[in-house]
Length: 170
Image (cartoon, one colour):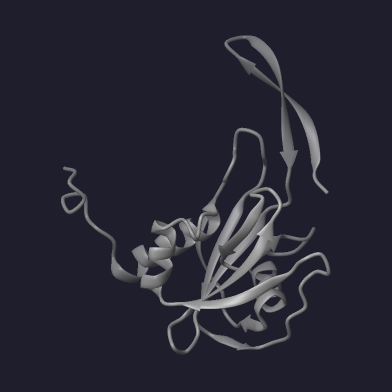
C-alpha cells in the first residue's frame, strides 16, 4: 500500500539512513448541512485499534487534485457532494518518517450524491453542531489530527480566534 524508502541525511558532516513512508497525501473535508451541522463518519481504524469519529477523508489518488479528492471522499463516505470546497489548512502530520501532506477543506454548499465507500470499510454518518464537535475533541471522541486541526482552524476562521492578550500572552 505504501512504499518505505531509505533516505540518506547528512547531519554535521555525518551521513545517516532514515526510513521514510512515501505517501500520496490525503484530504479531509468539513461539510456543513443547511442546518449548520457538521457531517462526520464513524469507522474502525486499524492503526488505532478502535472506532474513530472523524471528518470524511482519505488518500489522494495519483494525478488527482486535492479538492477533487475531497469531493470524491465526501460523496463516497457520506452521500453528500461538496460544490466548492475551500482549502483551510495544510500540514504534515508525521514529517519525521512520512511524506504525507494533509489538505483540509470546508464546504457549505452540498448537493445529494451517492455513497460508495470501499468494500473494506464499514462506516456510519453522524451530524454534530460545532459546539458538539469541540466537546467531542475535549472528551476524546474525536482524536485524529486532521479532524482536530480542520475543526479548530475553521472555528478560528469563523469566529476570528483569540488575540495574544486574550490567550494570556503578550
